[in-house]
Length: 252
Ligand code: PGA
Image (tube, rainbow, N blue to C red; front, side, top):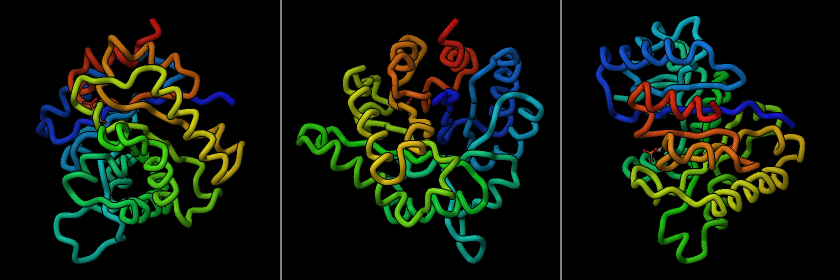
């Protein structure tokens, strides 16, 4: 089963509108000749419609970093899946560890957000990952199992075609520490077999599983060389267009 790699940039709470336009415009120029790869950037909500203009008619797709699960209503400060879709996004990052850590995104809330994304035709990137304490306590697989099972609870296979999974060990995010290739290989294989048990082998074989956590030009080729790694979710190293392009272009 061939899975087109996805390299996704999470810009977090960085860049004003003009700054986001500038980086996106540089990236469009750098990536014109990139083929056989999906590229996505996730600016802040505020910059989504602006960046949508910059990447229009290019091979760069847009994503949001979050969404709220309700369709509309009195939910001050929140943005719905339909609004994100209408702004030009195709993807939505859901359950990022910073959301879980700082904004109370539980597995149950993540599940509602996944369903909201799917119901609007947004491709959810479900982020999962263990903390350092959980890994040290030998609970990595237990935690990942719960995050995947609860995050996808009640969702039927037919609705899930566009799901992307992102394994991001919390201890590797923004720390400069990357999981070693053996650790990544072991977890990605585990996740694919988990999806097979929960859904089906055909589905499990078709899902893209990204690695995230201190991905940079120097380590991306090794990570992408792992059989079950189908792309990367990049934070810090996606903020600069040249650096992010060096990650995208890791094969050349
Ligand atoms: P990082 O972030 O690449 O800066 O470690 C990854 C992420 O948060 O998705």
